[in-house]
Amino acid sequence: MATKKELRIGLIGTGFMGRTHSNGYNRVPNFFPELEYTPVLKAVCSRNAEKVQAFADQWGYESIETDWKALVARDDIDAVDICTPNDTHAEIAIAAAAEGKMILCEKPLARSLAEGEQMVDAVDKAGVANTVWYNYRRLPAVSLAKQIVASGKLGRIFHYRANFLQDWTINADVPQGGTGTWRMDLEAAGSGVTGDLLAHCIDTAMWINGGITDVSAVTETFVKERMHTLTGKVQPVGIDDACIFHCHFENGSLGLFESTRYARGHKALYTLEINGEHASIRWDLHDLNRLEYFDHSDESIVRGWRSIHVTDGDQPYMDKWWVPGLGIGYEHGFVHQVADFLKSLETGEPCSPTFKDALETQKVCEAVINSAKSRSWQDTGVEWTEK
Ligand code: SOE
Image (tube, rainbow, N blue to C red; front, side):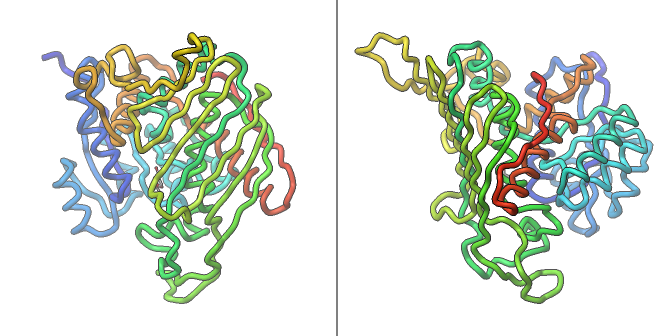
């Protein structure tokens, strides 16, 4: 067997995202055997030694650290993977870049545009490879939507519509702060559904349909006070529980986006729809292997929405998996991201979304929050180039 080049990973954070990324590293060698690089799970870091050791044993990490600074300084780590709450992304990424490490950072890039800009500066100065885990792009049906739009089949685009709906915070007893619920704490998260959920929709939207130029948004915080896990006190809630915004894209189309954690019955419903002059596309995370497609040039008596089962070998990523007709799942988006990152090391091409690309999403998120606060349209300042 030809010897592979090693990419020695140091993962920080052992929550939900730590698991999805670890699964990605573990699956890639089996399903992408042609890649020159292979991930080696060198070290994992979290504050609790017992828990982090259990995580290391479960996922196959060679060693543990309980201080991220120690992990970042290690000579046997090539790439630092940041899976910690948003308030630590900037500090860890800037330190990792200073140590010359490659960086894979969980989304959103940062809590704010200012933090994101510092992170972009740090990786630019250090000249290290970097990427942000916007995982949904790499589901085959979503990648196929991008291909179809890029091929021009839809013609001029008029509308881009996306929702990300959840219902896990309706109960006023859900606390803010601490493990899992740090997403409810403004200080830790930077924002609520805007950075956590709409950021996914914005990333996919700009990747498929180009830059968002200006936004008009409304946000709501339905439960105004919650117990804070860290202080033990009932405190005002600073995050947006729900956000709706509309916008213009550079290509002249209109966007409509909605996200909430108060849509009873919806756990993680990400949907998108694109309407063009000749055709439309829609996709739904709950049926993620399918892409719906309507082509107005079909003969009228059979014209209608087709449901494309995106499982064929000539569709994005699907030559790597089973046989036509057999689907894959949520976790495969992360496997594909690892594979694409390793490939980018071979080719020397950046692995999009890079920090710089993710900063464009951050600009839209910031403009959305500012628009809701000021009740006015806000320019995003996005500078989008074809990715
Ligand atoms: C929040 O519930 C969450 O886990 C997000 O943080 C993820 O980014 C999203 O993919 C699923 O929902």
